[in-house]
Length: 94
Image 1 (cartoon, rainbow, N blue to C red):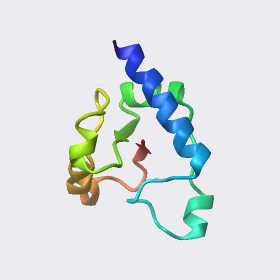
Image 2 (image 1 turned 180 degrees about the vertical axis):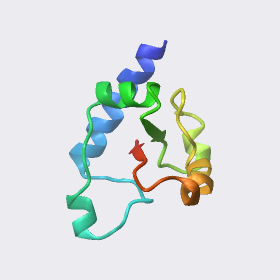
Image 3 (image 1 turned 120 degrees about the horizontal axis):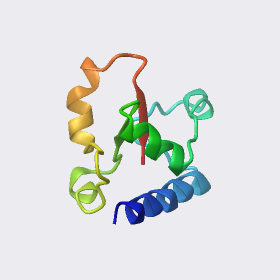
Image 4 (image 1 turned 45 degrees about the vertical axis):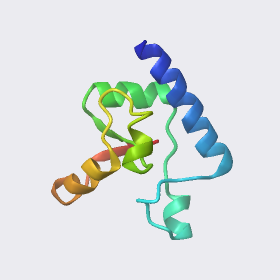
């Protein structure tokens, strides 16, 4: 079951990269988009499970609840924690 979730994550991430879509929480400047690092699903899984990165659903909470991956934060949860996160915290949006 967990592997299925990561396969879905891989598909979602691939689609986001393909269409050039990015999280509404990210800066809207062209420079910020150009500096956005892409990550493959296997690496995202390893970093999330190891506690090295936060996995965040970038959609509205009602939509996220239907596709929230294990260990991921809802956008509202992320927004409430944002001010307390260290500037070096790696964040992976899907």
